[in-house]
Length: 186
Image (spheres, rainbow, N blue to C red):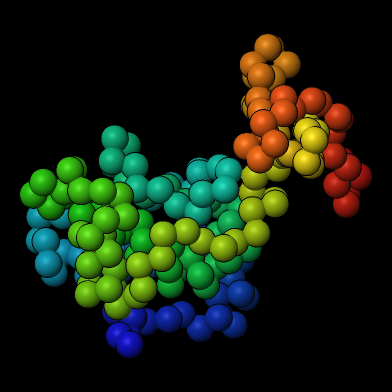
């Protein structure tokens, strides 16, 4: 087993940080990962960093925008995992994309996996296992023959304007059954 190339932050220190300080720690972690990547690719541009990603995704390498996007809700709830896993995951995408012919590489293909293992010393995990309930609220409920499906407001609006959705399991058309009631009463 390899050792992670970036040191693991103290979980107690990280948990005690306020939001601004924790976001600063995220920016510092991206900077450290970028410096590590520059050891193998000196021409690698510094990515911008934004905490504006919504939905279920933890992070995203956004090449058109020129940087890395992170989900602020998931970051607040999973700070240590973000710094240890998500930042290297997205920085590996950033590095691979900027290699010769990197734009032709599959997103989680051999090149990305190699960067994760050999440069960052981490297993190349493709998905996270964070609870996305607060990050991706889906308050609209639709039913079919086999269960209940949660729709976001955007998908609900598409359904209300005439778009039909079918269940992947039973193939029945989904029918609106009302809004979900959350613990806080909203």
